[in-house]
Image 1 (tube, helix red, strand yellow):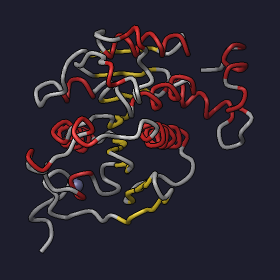
Image 2 (cartoon, protein in one colour):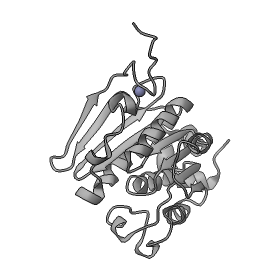
Image 3 (cartoon, helix red, strand yellow):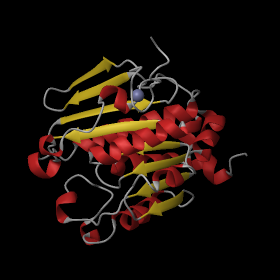
Length: 254
Ligand SMILES: [Zn+2]
């Protein structure tokens, strides 16, 4: 594959970077990324990945746009209220980069469709807002050996971690199982500062690009925590749990 004149112009600021170059841009263009969710985290992640030239972007979300989404889910505009999020998102991404192939699934990710949906993508980005889907996606990615880029946000706090199955810990190594529903606080209950998913979703997109390019240090085995009130970023070392129900091998150790 070689870049066209248009691609050389469009991606010139990437190509100038010695860490990227034309070869790196070709890797980005060959990349296939699935975003689970088309809301707050997916907004910056999808915008930047499409702009960067990722060749195939998949989006799965069964929700429609509501007025309370607009404070942070910048893929969606006021005239998108009541429209499916994947339809709204698709239009914005196509306008940014018409050469990006967009694949949308207007449905919920479930145990019965997850393997079929992720199989045609190289990597999966966690842009979901609920634990059930996040654990399901983590387990499926571990099983299918797909890199999984975790991100989560609430109130003024965010976190991100990159999961490379076989190389580092998975999400379930950190949090063994979903918390009881009564203990879960959602942004609909406790709120969220609108810019927060912008920060974390952009970090997830950065990790995806670095993964495709094979450059830098990924957040593998490290949970990045962000406090927007104090502007503290901290990295917590995470070890693989040998008894992890998703990636551990119970019985292999003594
Ligand atoms: Zn694990």
